[in-house]
Image (cartoon, rainbow, N blue to C red; front, side, top):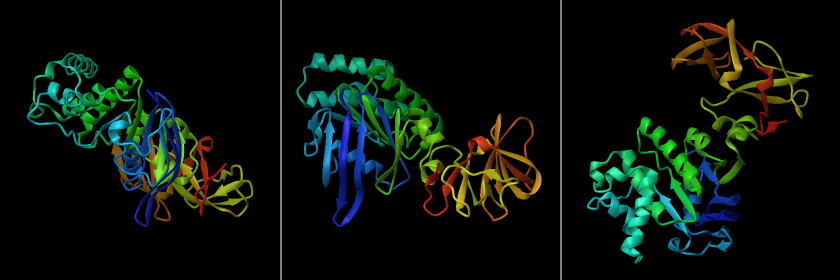
Length: 350
């Protein structure tokens, strides 16, 4: 297996630049997830690693090899797409071994490699079936098996679960995590779903508009975001942002029932955004916020509030009490879990 290095990688379509000088090191055996909103460049970047998109400038290395100008077949990668792309007239076994057959591998080797991939993915009972006789999750496992039998240095996944229903997505997340643990391969995974990113990744790369916003382990990004974008993107429900003003040693806000301590580099008079996750807010009877909706999920509920300036706030509630639509409440803050961002640049104030 091998790591992947991107050195000042740029992608242009004519005069339009969509990838802006990406520098990134993915270690051997690491599970790296590219995450970001639609159009941020994550799939384009993955396709550049695969060789399906030409790299305008910069260098891509897999292990010690410069693969920037190599054909996809020479890069030592296997890619699993959003669509399964299985041959409908072939059995599971034939689909998984077809790539090796086309490159002239002996039948005994193909059978052995397909058998090992089938064992890993629990497909032994389906080898003689054709794709139409499989569920969506089983078809995606076959597509992954086809990638495994090639023995690549790097696995690339381009939103492989987006066509599955919610239950199957959870099941396949577990399967992919287990696969990574068993074979220890370097994997790069693209998704717009930050829950997938948080549950699968060793390293998350948060992208926006073709640039890297922050790179780190899932909980590092959750606990220590560099800017409002990362803070709002990582975490579900996302972080709340309330406008405030620094006054002396405190931050005051129309949307909070109490002043909160300022942090780090915040200056007196500075306009800031107070970042608060739903689990770090508390409710008390009051008048500043109106309950607009309560989502009850059993052991936890999410209370959607409308603030005094029309801002929308989500608060996590636990226990037996559930706020009702129309209730009037005030917000209390857990000061140990508060983030401040500059209101103009949206950078974190540390």
